[in-house]
Image (cartoon, rainbow, N blue to C red; front, side, top):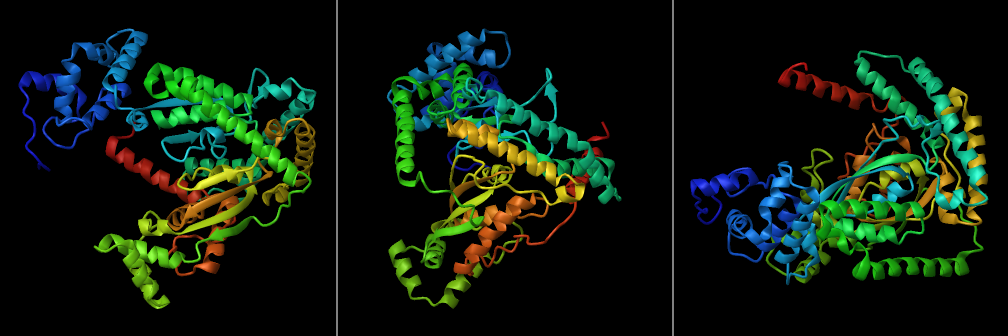
Length: 547
């Protein structure tokens, strides 16, 4: 079925040339295949300034244009043996030539790359994952993987260069080794205690063992220091990578700057035109701006707040919200379905009583059948600001939400730590507290000379403070996702308290957040989820055979 004008007609020879690069040749909706990212970017950017169809554009101005070097670029991508360096250079020349006169940074969003950053700390991984949009990260999980492995006789934690070149090197190594010793030593006893307390039922051996592993990891992850090494995979567009690298070059941490340089070098091999401005004429002024602004703000804060001790306080505080949120949401929800201005809509909504506004919100949300039925964009017109406090392990999970504004403070050992309830039953609560106190002493010693670097010595059990500024739509998403019963109790608690705080001021707005899960659960949180995985495994066996 055609969606618009008559499609281009191609000869059989032309179809033969084009077919490797499109998922079909006879429809008006198609995907691009077998094309390097730089060609995709240039093709789409040229597409915006041409009357030709995409297939015709590729044929006339790319494939048949000898100056483009298209055959050399694409033949390498298809594995015909052309030299990758030559192909990349030709691709960059091609990209620059096609884009002469465009001057639009958004063009770099039309191509992207996958990159792996291995052997990075849990301090650096948060920097890598800070981007709100444009980059999708995936990190090695502390819930499904044990971190007890030694390589060449050493636990896997990051030896921060500034610390290792200071008088704190010995105590830092001693602290990290001691934390890992306890973590590794207690995996066996913790698993044993769990299997005794929660014996296997009708579930499969795979589901049971996976659940026990996840529970043991949840209980023990508080021992892990923020220096713990992890792996992060990223997929992103060129524009987002370029800005991420620039920001990382401005970091006060040597590790982060080193990762930026490594990412820059590798991405220059695959999407050079998209990331080349991360340093140099354009990047360096931005690096100075970020770095010098940070130093200036730190100086002001030291002067104004330097003598004030931080208080742990409440875990969730609603520090700000739209007083007229209900009116804003109702008006914005109605607006797309009218032909009048927003001002006119708001004027009418202002005259409605609370019952009428409530009925409109009911109409907008009452058909939700599961948490994936997110409110539509009318709910983006009211905002809430929270001051949040949770252990670093829980923060790492909540940090993954990107459609909001989050700003964290430096991780420290000044706000106390959480003790998993199970440690008392297992009989290791005392050892846990002793290790936390030891780490606090190490942190405080290092922090006298370098606060940012001292973060590496802080265990996941210690609390961190951050702010979250989000709209009502994202609040629905965050609370309903992070309160599910298979989630970790620490971040479930934060999510549900966020809902409680908003309900106090705007009950009508959160009335339909019916998939927030307040159930108390003591046991193997992951078990039901693992059973569902078993069901999918069996379905795949039926579909594809038991291979």
